[in-house]
Image (cartoon, rainbow, N blue to C red; front, side, top):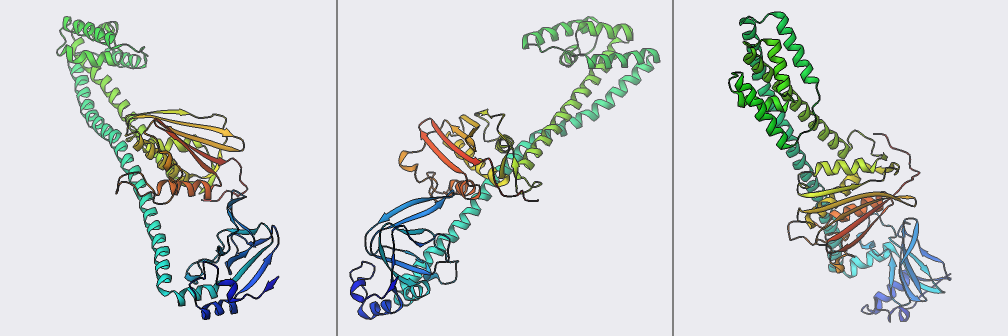
Length: 474
């Protein structure tokens, strides 16, 4: 039901109390009064914002759709409260949609003004205020966008620096071992030639090569440092007794390869007592070549593992939306942050029965990065980081617990607010948790919970296990 409104009805409202008679007449000319019954929707969230509403009498509730449920934010019976197209003064520079749902709780009358008329009024009657409001809105939007990009770039820089550092170590080890391997190969060939020149026949050389292969295949049990030291002393004494030059330099390498005095005696038996010293030096170099090959294989394997983790983290070769193993996503992020975790004990408690979860994997890794980096900072790089996955009803649960200083109680309700940070100026943008919230809640229809006290802060991320959206192609 629609009816006209008079200036006398608008004048007592706080929103219009400073307007003159002409302005009130203008509002009455273009506005009207609408009545709503109990439970009736005045405006619905997401619909085009066509009208500006002001409460004349009755009671209304403001709500917002969160996880498919209408969450009531406030209710009031105070005449003059407003809602609807409150940002119409921005005209067509942004998409105008209702940000909330307004509902009548009992018979209610609302003053209704078309959004375009309201926007025109604000711009013409209050030009300075309109410019200030526009500046605040667009300034904050731009600042948030720039800071958001900076936060993502900072996280990317952190990951890149850690990955570069981790790749450098095995790459350097492989390079060093490769250089030494060339020298040892040349030296081993010379030793073999010396043996042949000294009169060791082909049959004995063949037996030496077979013996070396047999020794290389022999598995040695793990030994304590004391046992290794005793074995090196025993081998050194035996080599000295048999006039092997550099006995104490050869002994550690032979023992490290798993050889003992019995093996050395087998070499002496095959090569002959006269050529035994040259045979032992050849054997030591051949075994060292094997160890260098193992080092190169280990180093390249570590590089491959790091690159696999980087690919898993970035998800560049995967579909944006897919079913993913949360444990693998968490592990890939931990690998990227390994350098920062050097003095932190990481405890993993993954539920082996947790099914794969439909997620935007690359975006979710950004969440893990933000939560891990915050935990590391809170612990000042020393402490225990516990990561647990489990199932909670129809959701997958990821718990990230640190032993840091904790979050002050008064800040717990503000940590997901854009630009809020407890870090010193210049060390935080205040968008890490805001980004995480938007990825988990808005992007995945999940939730983030937090509990904190000194020595224990726990973030809990909930992600739906089912989703009707079809998997996207890469």
